[in-house]
Image (cartoon, rainbow, N blue to C red; front, side, top):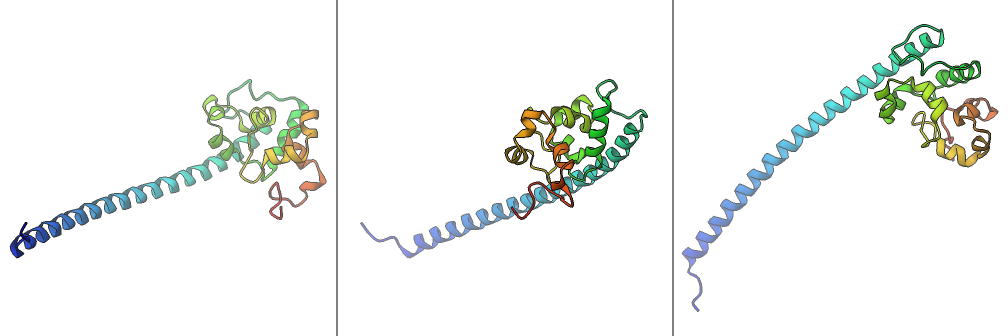
Length: 176
């Protein structure tokens, strides 16, 4: 077999260079598309954050109004609370450890049904465990305080009524 001549090798190198240039152009095109998608994702995340903040602000106002006995945009009937629940609900709603917007975002079933997030959390925290916010780890609290299961007490209410909550902005505390 004879060795390829110089001209054939040059042709192959030129072909490889063109293929490499085409691959680089394709890579650049995909890089630009990825950059557009990232930008779009970042805009969507910012919009979601803004909407979440607005929802949280609206919920604070709505729950204060609902607590005063006036109509809110929540379904009627499902928010009728007992006197004992009213006190617990006020405790929950006033706590930074309950974030109604977070609760609705995390539990879309509650949002779809139009239920008051505070009332729903008060009554249905345990099936499955439903976190009231990023700052309160309900599963860890139940592990640390199993009496809440025996006594059927809402863990956040239990925590807020205890001396352990004084000055706390999270559970478990960051030092854990």
